[in-house]
Length: 130
Image (cartoon, rainbow, N blue to C red; front, side):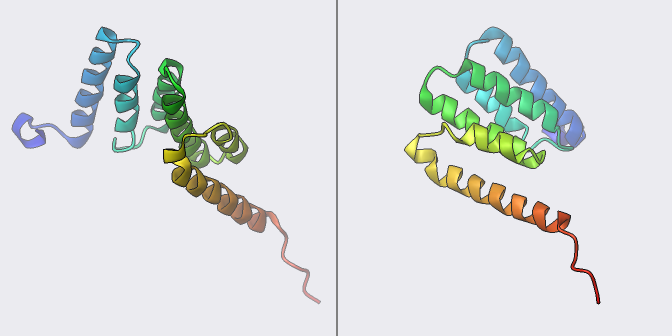
């Protein structure tokens, strides 16, 4: 599509996002469409974390069952980890109970623990030299 329409990568992503937005105007209550739109932000370059987070927050609001809510929570936790908000990430993950998402939840909890340990190590002063 980029070569055919002579678009840059950024222009291509902008067009894709525009088309998703138009689709969401036609089906504003569609969780599957909102989740697909939000997933798109994982591949958009340059990254647009604030827009991706907003898209997952919207998808969460549109979720109609626990499975959809848990999926959105997983992604909200990923964005929180990326932003360094480890406690917020834990809050998003705590209510996740969908068994199919358990491996992802555990992986994210490990990332939170590892990030917290790295942050604490960076903040711990080195022992004084004698």
